[in-house]
Image (cartoon, one colour):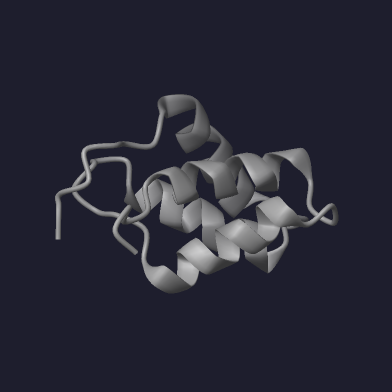
Length: 82
């Protein structure tokens, strides 16, 4: 499997941190935030289940702009061969 060279930006990292600390954030948003933060160093990539979750968030109009931003970041670091 090719190495992931993409990293979560500092702006998205801050958003992810705020999301995890917020009591009003949904579980979906928190799981996307955790995934985004785990990819800050660039040596990890999105797993298949998280990739599917992120794609569903982006396709839905139920989620907040911030949740979609986290989903886009997570999805951009997915395995391109999958």
